[in-house]
Image 1 (cartoon, rainbow, N blue to C red):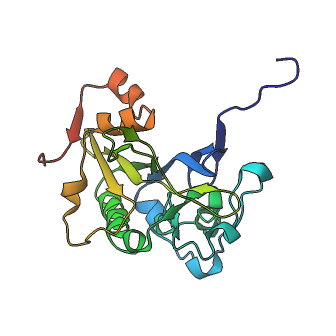
Image 2 (image 1 turned 90 degrees about the vertical axis):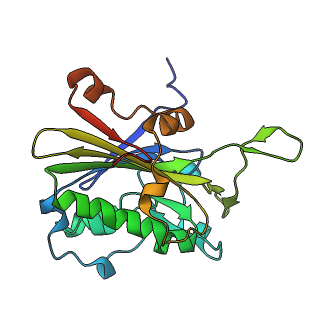
Length: 233
């Protein structure tokens, strides 16, 4: 276009992850990170990291710390800080607000935290674990029998509060086998005693809801693929 296009996919490549930013929601569509034994080891200090605006995002479209203040929501990491102890910069990069979404505090500090820990445990026992995390805005039937997508926004920048969150795990095993695990949790208090297996869903359900396709290259290149869904271990 002679005068420039009004918008393009906003990719950000950081030391610890790659994300695709959604300027309308003021958060990421997805964040992908690579975990292995090396990324989990190190002496990075979380207390030396502060949540910060992402200056690479236009000021019209980015969240600020003030948006979260008094909102009742945690600043929930998509790429988790504890996944990147290998480098202080890598850990610090996870504190950009473009890698953050409004998350129910009980979820963030309990069941979701358990899922993040589980991802790290898998990384210790596999060659690599690729973790793709993002928000979902799922429809719900209202009293009139019609389906609506409704979600809260917070702060003067109208940061969208997801109805749910997903994580898609791609495990590269030492044997060469590739395994998929995909999870969805509601953005509400979740009993952390519920087994994580209860949140397993077919990857197709996340793809349909999010508009994303997670493993097209894998499906073209290999038949050595095992998908773990609810009830299959």
